[in-house]
Length: 395
Figure 1: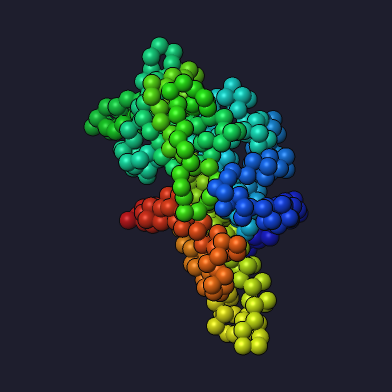
Figure 2: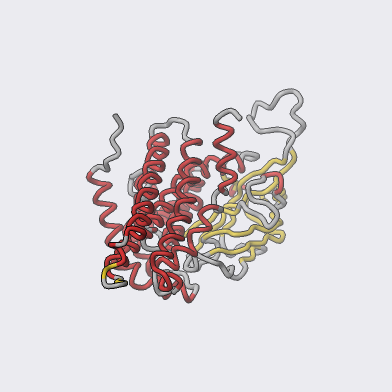
């Protein structure tokens, strides 16, 4: 029989992050959000707590934990604020994880200690103005000129790419054309007859690498999201991350893990909506009694709690399979799809419970409502998740 109870270390981690979120993040994050300002001080404290190093070995400056520990931390942060949570999620799963999974030993020792400490953030540049999930739409190119890669192109919606502590962006780029694979494939394992896409690390400040102004976003206002451009940007050939021609495939494997993390973040937001609604329903009175005594409100909040609890089990299951080394693509897609959609539902219902106050930015549920929608889009849209699940079912 499965046992999803957390061990003592994870219980202690959850409590520590919960206290940090409530005591440190909650009192100030609303102001950061309204100013569209990145919370450097909060991120610095998260680094000192070791949150950015949770799933990495101690030899690289990490905490020696696993990916599930990261998910537990993300859930607790997102119960209070998603901007802070997505900064951690992207910093680990999109910034540091590709280096850890596919980088050379030299790349790991150069970059991971600073990423694990939180003194540096990394980003991953996949999405472009004309395409995200469609690898064939990649227009950014990288050609070898002697011992340097020369990059040209544009990336869009890149998280953590323009902060004062961003150290690099790992960029997917077309590095050639793979030959027509009529003979049935190559020994390298590359998918032939398509663009050859590789991942290349571009340090911040490299000539030809331009970071745009921050987007004006609906939500996640205290996180950093930018458009990036490359104009004859040159980096050493040694900055190739992983194997040439495997950049997109590498990222897809990273994305499978990232979907579990986004599911955990979504559960945190959904649970935060429950927390805030219970608190408000006990305090707010109408017609001489707390509104929580009205069945219409009580049942609404009960349904919110049901959704959050079910979604939590979904990401626990996906994480369990991943840590066992079993195939988990289907479970990760299910967790991400369900968790993100119920986060949107819970945010809408929490706003309704709060009435007019739910439309005021001084109340956390207004921020949660604005933050929730992107969860159905980022790291694979709901439509992509359904496509993945259908494929795993053989359809």
